[in-house]
Image (cartoon, rainbow, N blue to C red):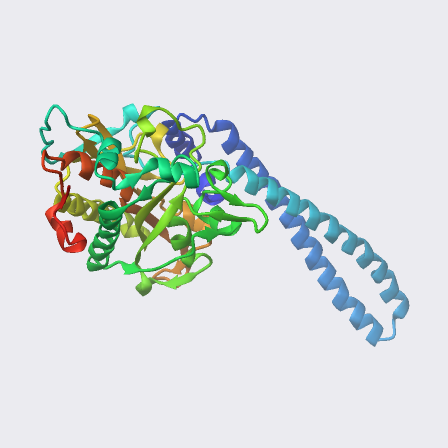
Length: 423
């Protein structure tokens, strides 16, 4: 959530940057500033009323002690009016503050100056590409056909148990899935990220803190009786570890990693592009997250991007990195780099990771601060990235590593799987 002082001091720049998201923010920014001006006016009146009330109360005490009860009682009548004013001003102030908060929660993060303008994913900017796209035989199969051929993923069984988008991994498919999770976690902890295990359900405060609520409420599974939400990503519970914290400067950065299943309703998703593992309602993901000093958050973003690159290099999968345009940027992000693996059998790129800097946007919602070098509290910057999401990585491995003899396992995963081929 944007801070009002920031909006007030950089009004023109905020409106200009939000245009990259194809948003004409002039009206809503004016609403914010008007509401804040009215809120501050009410606050000033309330402060004056409280000050006057306090001053008169002291005077009444002095009058009673000096035996001037009549004068004291006259002043008491005035305090009755002031107390009524205090109640009405407090109510009006709360209403105004809630209205301001409601408007602020509707404004997305301001894009970083490097974010390209654009409307859709077709306007995203390819900034890096690496890896050799293998040449497959004419009878090469997409991963959902390979999964059936080698009996490693059962989509129909998952549909029977739960519904579409909930596959069952079997035999070597389940082992490969587990191997990827352990491999990702090992690489992350070796890079300095502390592993955590977090809850798979969160409360409203956690969902609001990272920006899933109210923006993405319809995409989340809601346990209505307990008012809890199944997590769409480990980012939500992991970031909320730091909600309400006041850290010391020397405690930064905080770097954590965790594996969780992820649950997404993906309402309205259908068609050939979501077949098989391309889009699921439940899937596994390993996440990395950082809490940083604002002065080095973009250096940290580069480090996170470089880290994900090393994992894909070790897996020897052809991949590319895109800088997302304003129209494709997530609500809370200031700058996002997407990683995509090339699916040779499908002849298309599959998104497997997003690495984002949220600057202070999440931290403001989380009330996540640190004491800076001058001893003053300041909002931290938060970042997170997939390292990695499993379904499309697995799809890429199955399709790009298929041979006439079977599906080879990337060399780096063999120590984790205990086998080198699926046949």
